[in-house]
Amino acid sequence: MEQVKKEKSILGRINDLSHRLVLMLVFPIIISLVLMLFYAWKYHSSIVRMGTIANLKTLVTEEIPGSVWNIVSGQNVFAESNVYSMIFEVKRTIEIITEQTGQENSLSLIVAGRTMQTLENYVDHIHENIVAQVPVVENEEVLVEIRDVASLVDSMLNEYIAQEIASTARMSLSLWFVIIATAIAEVLIVLAAWWFSNKYVKSTADFVRQPIESLEKVTGMLADGTLDARLTDTNVSELRNLTMQVNTMADRLEDMMEQSNQDAKKLRKAELRTLQAQINPHFLYNTLDAIVWKAEAGEKDEVIQLTSALSDFFRISLSSGADWIPISQEKKHIEGYLKIQQTRYRDILRYEIDIPDEIGDRYILKLLLQPLVENAIYHGIKIKRGGGLIKVAGKMEGDDLVFSVKDTGLGMTREQLCDLNERMKKGQPAVSEGGGGFGLVNVNMRIRLYYNQQEGLKIQSDAEGTEVSFKVPCRTREEIFEHESVSG
View 1: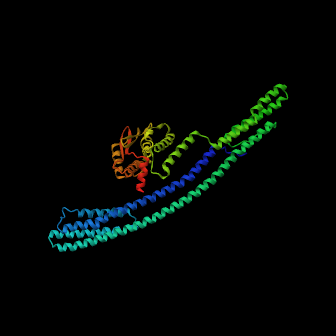
View 2: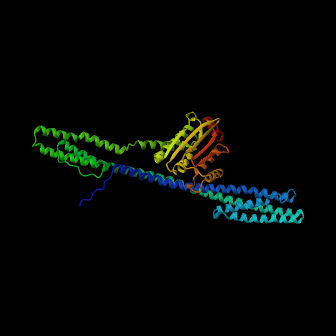
View 3: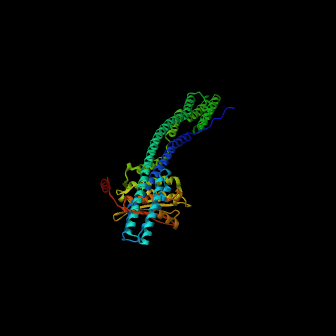
């Protein structure tokens, strides 16, 4: 029995090509981003640890000996001094950093912690001498020991910082290798994707061209009077019905030709002309050309709109490296993002943008509104049954710009709101992505740092939804350029 051919569609092959290309290009990018974020986190953690240890050096070498001197010289008493609290703070901080540090760099901190215990013992000795009212000279001798021990602790802390710097340098080198390897891999993958795409496009073109050429050939033969010409079965689903119809019409035409010899001349000619008109070669040629053109072009209005929106989204996200963009661009950015999301979530997401064109030429720190909109979608609208509305608004208030993102999604409880405000105050995101608030914490921090102001985001939430707002100074293009030139 003849093996049945597996039927395939042109659109299916095109979709299969696009899915494979996306997987080939996106997967290594995700891997490289994860690696880079991992190294960036380790680098940042090392910097924070070094900064914390550096802050302890003043306590160890100056403030603790200074406080003990004030006690020994009679300028202060133990009850009123904070020498023990400073020693406890240093020891506790060293313990915390030791737990966070890798084993290869923790030895200096362990020695420093033990040496701090020796320093505390000397302070206890001075305390006992004062209670026993021993001569000041003896306490001064102990004070010299305290200063020597403090100097030793300081050298241990310096050694730790030097080790951390060396580790950070190694991490930086590793990150550089990762970037180089990723770049090479991306180039190779792009070349492979280009080769695969060309090969697959050529295969798809052959897949479509062969049955079409067969159609053109058979219909040409039918037009020339070779009525026994027939098309072989095709495995292209879009052309299967057309092939069957052409063969059916050819069968009918051949039957009509056989019967025409027995019919009257006029009736035979009329029926023949009618049937030939149905399979006019020129009509079939144009139709087949149109099928090929549409299959290769893939014209879909929705795809064009989404592609344009996505192009605007990333173009504005990059902004040629600029940190400040006009409000009109920020508005266009969130419009593109909301169009893409609305296509994805369809009926559950509605949105309104109320940012007047009058403030469109003012400048704002980029990417402030989109994370708020994203948070409203994923932690408000998406998890609420029936969906909801997101309203983005902006206006001038005196010399300030006021923006707000309000949603009618699932609001936060009082405990969740308090937790989020506390994390924003400390600059800490959620432990897990499901905890939410990462974008809010990030935006809040950027507003406070870039605009040099105490207040960032203001959040109000209840069972009817959540509103996130912020106020920043209004700046013109000239002010931005002047600020950047002064900073540079």
